[in-house]
Image 1 (cartoon, rainbow, N blue to C red):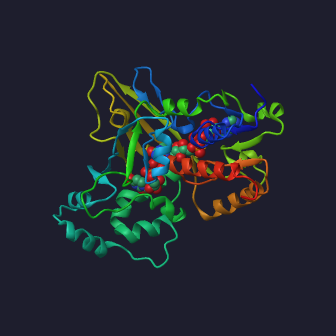
Image 2: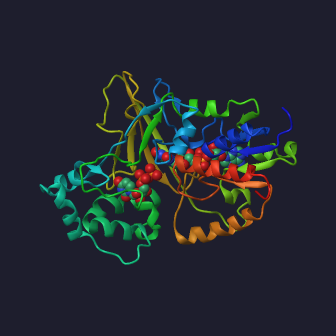
Image 3: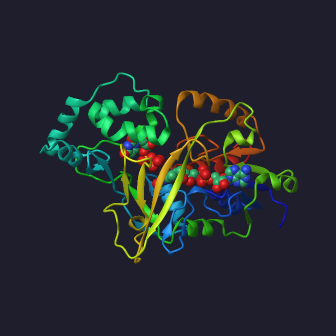
Length: 368
Ligand code: FAD
Ligand code: UDP
């Protein structure tokens, strides 16, 4: 290939959007990913039985950003899909986010729509300054619902108590007073009709983009002298953990297929806040709408060691990240963007927005 002007480290959402933006601006882009495929954690593929699955856990696209939705629509058609989740609590399967149905079913009540807020006000523990995830949950639903739905799940997922995590973690889950049982409230909720990998293939299909999977960026550095680097991996790895390792939460995924059976769950995901070592089970055909004689599911087991999947939002980790960000801010030849490079608990749409912004800034004429 022509000498690259840009080296992109990582072919996930962050890297692929940056690659496309640079290619369309006439730059020569080399994208490398150390994994044997594109798509990062959003990669999807058919399992041995031919069911489309997400090897790195269930990915459901949702956004309030028209810009992000329209941008991705250049590379995929969509399938309308609103994700629903049930939580197994006290032997029952109840809607999460907590809504009117959850409360009525759990406590044997018959609260009308105009009575739910009053009920929540009677159990919630007001908090003057919300700092932790425990503050968020207690202030919205009070101690009993906190124990039943949040404390155990959070301990399993993060290895930490709710009180040890920043507010933003639990604040991802709203509380509803109506019967809305959708997991997300966003205005755009869709799955890529042919899957995520097909969408990434289109995004990276440009005459100015070369992709090399199964390649660590350190292997190619000598050949790309002078190229600007867009780095989307863990920021502490870029700096050889010189300030110490940033903590990440990992997962192990158990994928199972049941042959010749109908769907096993009534909704896409069932959460297990208080039972089992896994946090949740997701059945892919709900997400993709595919027809098949069997069904494939994934069990998620959180763990400390392994591939980094989640930054862990808490003040001491923010402080450590700030040291790396200071170093990153001083670089003129490297752009850091993505969930692990920015150490932010970002969803896919937020990564797309961050990547578009980063490239807008990077490509803006100096002094503009
Ligand atoms: P990644 O997808 O992690 O891509 C970074 C890439 O960099 C990786 O492929 C990695 O191999 C590569 N890399 C790292 N180091 C090197 C190196 N030295 N050399 C070469 N390559 C390197 N978001 C949603 O919006 N909805 C969901 O339902 C959802 N579900 C999720 C479920 C799970 C279990 C997880 C873990 C995340 C979920 N997310 C979801 C978040 C979503 O995965 C991320 O926001 C998004 O994929 C991050 O994209 P990224 O490009 O920043 O990072
Ligand atoms: N959470 C919980 N119980 C649930 C669902 C979520 O306690 O049934 C908390 C938990 O701390 C979790 C966080 O809310 O890590 C965010 O949940 P989300 O489903 O957004 O997590 P993700 O899909 O990113 O793993």
